[in-house]
Length: 501
Image (spheres, rainbow, N blue to C red):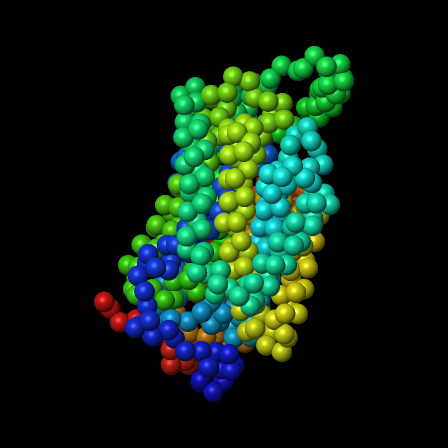
């Protein structure tokens, strides 16, 4: 009965149909801003660290894998949460009680969603600090490679960025929101500029350009020759342990690992993002445009830019040897230093709203799950963790971050889909206590998806985020059929749907 519901559930009110908006006003721009973020698309060409990255088998396997991954994000990770948000008009922390119970729902997905936002805050701070260090040539521990790595200046910028973004997210997000709609235009323009600058080399690109790029001849300076010889000897010693280039199938799997792992939390957040959508058509159009199309655009541009640069450059400067990051290649490789500096600053500015929104989402989650704790304290602790991650460089390990995110929310999205389908394509309503079907499916799904971070198990599970999703889905169905779902509680808003337009 409704009287058995916790206060945070009983007091929840669905968003009225009259307050719903069209897909181009909410879902599409919100997700597009995430999927054209430079910290995302710069990871794609070189993801995984194998020679040639995701270009090692050529452009076609990479592009096919990109399209498949984008569609997985839309259809498997976003669509069901989005429909649940639209059909109920309720936020994720309420909708999630069907899958994890009214007690368990406070932790999963509520508290977990809030906690993982600080991974994104640290990730954002690390790469914004990196791009600014490259721009102003400070904090570069290795001048020879011109790539910023964690150092004093890098850490100071990262901490300042994270703290300021967290403060604005708590107190002044409405001001950032006014300009956030337009800032995604910046990375789109940057991608187009870089594409125009490199498109001439696409016709000459071969897989060899990626796996064994043409390095400029060493300078005749004796000191540099000695350094080069030492590096060659070190490289020879490590050659036996060096990874091999990926084949076509491996490239497509790695592409899905990268993109789906990055997107997983945003998929579950579809409940909140799509809850003010007018109808099912708007939920689908928003996802196809803001998720699938935006991902395909930014990923394709990133791959073509790097391929065009490698194919059109006679000799790659030594400092860019093996570097498949389009942002790193921008300065002195693709564009003049002055032009690249301007674009780097603009990319850093365009990332600020995302950092603020991470703090805002975390604060909202903590207000619900930890109502007796001042949000300044909970967000402050989370921000301190994000700063540690950025300063130490942990947040810069995209493969690690994407694996953790995918392992955490892959089984959440899988179990939510199973729950939705078993209930007849609607929200089943809150369940009492701790719904064991949801919790067991998440625990096993997380264990499977997180195996990749264990050195001895790395690479044993293909596409960990999708593996976690499948385990979460299948296990929830099996456990639900075995009667391990907890009792349903009555809630007047459980079947509310917006009026058809």
